Amino acid sequence: MTDVPAPATRASDPADAPPARVWVLDDPRAGTAAQALGIAERLGLPFRRIPLAWSWMAHIAGLAPAGSLLGLSAAARAAIGHASDQALDHAPHLVLSAGRRSAAVALWLKSRFGCRIVHCMSPGLSALFRPEAFDLLVIPMHDEPKDAENTMPIMGAPHRLTPLALHQAGEAWQERLAHLPHPRVALLVGGRPGGTDMPPFLANRLARQLARIVAAQGGTVLATTSRRTGEEATEALAAGLGRVMHLLFRWGEPGPNPYLGFLAMADAIVVTAESVSMISEACATGVPVFYALPELAGRRQRRFIERFEEAGLIRPLGTSLSPWPRAVLDESARVADEIRSRFDLPGSDA
Image 1 (tube, helix red, strand yellow):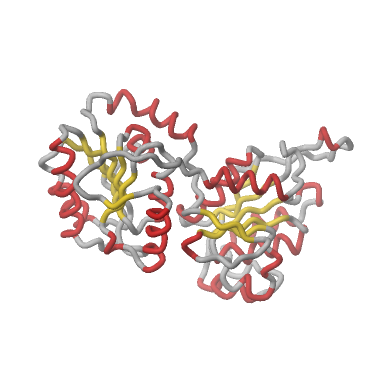
Image 2: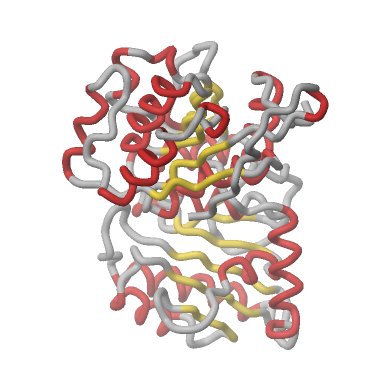
């Protein structure tokens, strides 16, 4: 837990007020936590991470209209309980959360402290009784959010990939990747949502398709897999890339994960179609982004692909990696700007 201590005293002059106390409810699922963390980092204010862990009872916590800590682990309860024992001068002004399980915790904190809540993704059951309790709901357009004053539709998912992070990753990986010929194509491979059983023949087919394209141009494939890919599919991917110069990072292998370095050094990016988070991050770069293996995508992911393709952000992988003019997507920064404009947060530049 990153704990940035709040000042013990409250300044009398608003111009000298300490920064807003921002709490981030840190869901154990990395892709979920990254949405709230990415927005917090773009606010430019100190924030405190509250690590969450769950039992099966968390699924019914949303039935409590005022929020609930039901289903939280003992450690998470202790972290929140310790804070709730403090004076109001240490309470949060703003709580950032993501995912259905953390929505009930955010509502509990609002009932206790009167703080603002910014929640990413659908809050599920927690929105049944008090949808207005969420000060801002950040909902992807492909989830078809309702038109409401407290709802902000966005493209894809917020994330932690910033221009600075890309620059730093490029500097860190430049020397290690500088010998590889252009075009360098980053291949980001996921798998079936919620599983680790990506069909090996699909991985091999994708690898062979991309290998033909890149080999014809004398370039390099920079490939990385995820926890959803699975060992068999990873080996099938490696076999398919055999005819082209490539680097392959297998999920879980020792050493630094080159994911950010690959994104920073790529001339083009190919992402499997089921990964909302990886495509959203790829679109934060300035290079062309292509999606592959649309058969891996469920109904929700297919709506996401359609939205992004209609907006000109991505194209299907075909026989060419030619670029086209497209916008660089930075939804985390846009949400942070919206928070500043809506809420009078102490110490904010707004």
